[in-house]
Image (cartoon, rainbow, N blue to C red):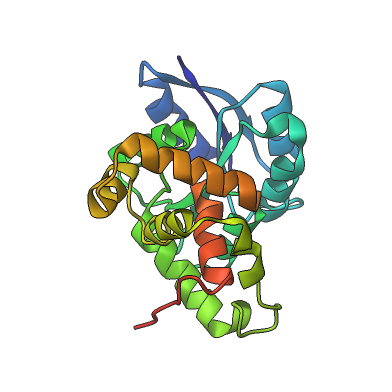
Length: 226
């Protein structure tokens, strides 16, 4: 199955470079290019994209607004958004994850890392750059966006989870894969996948990235800031 990739960035030169790289792979192809968020949303619908590489900062409708729109559209539940950022630490990254993005990637990433990110996002089974994403969430929730900040506590939303599902959620928030979690909890990877899927369904999470955000926002996992 070919992964259908949409490129959304206002820099034409960067889009061209990404297109050459993506189209060189036998299992993926670029199906559209957008220079702003509004066009990205339109093309995501018309071109049946599987993964959108979305720049956070674009003129007009930015990547954050576009990600929210894609995530809110029932017809686009299969679309995974990977945010592209110039900086390692960017407050909009956390907002993007909350809006429904599957993860983020720096624009300076190595080619293999970019291609791997697309495949991981398309598979929907692992969070992109889990350690870095976890660090960003921890950093900004610790600055007052978590349960002790301006937003009300959200711990109650976890009441629907079983004790094992909570254990698995903690491991997911730690950036661990299903295989790693299975080894840690001494169960099969299939069992872990089942718990993850059930937790996502109960919490209304779009993917594992959303589970990480929920784990921090609810206070199940506390941020550690160096």
